Length: 152
Picture 1: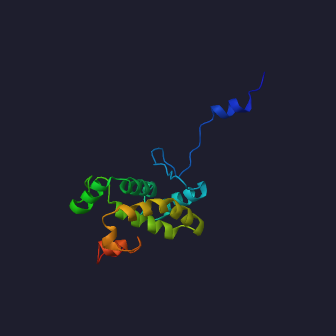
Picture 2: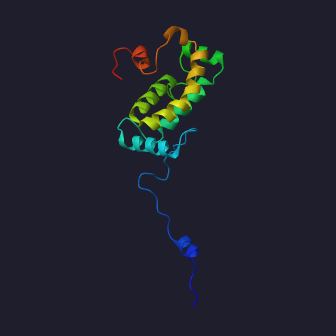
Picture 3: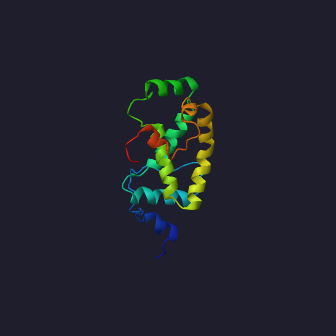
């Protein structure tokens, strides 16, 4: 009786899945970050109570989309409220969350995430109608400036 090849045996086995990655979990893919940093972010999302899987990539995407809006839409957003309603979240709150994530990451991971966000932050500081009002304020203290009295 001929024996089966190893790849045939492996093809017939059920695929094992990692216990921390359910079938419908959002992927954590952020351009410019290494696999090591992405794994660290994924671990933070699993262990921190204020995070859910995919929150960091969602915050990066929200901040990226917000920064690249046309100037008229940015001005409308700051004068009259969010363009999208309450469905998508506040981009400034997303940026504050990313700042908290950078504090929780290792030095190497924080450096990579900071480098990935640096270009977007510069674009926001150049184009945002809020920039002259806030001055040279960092994103760490943005939460206390926008929401005085609420611990953040």
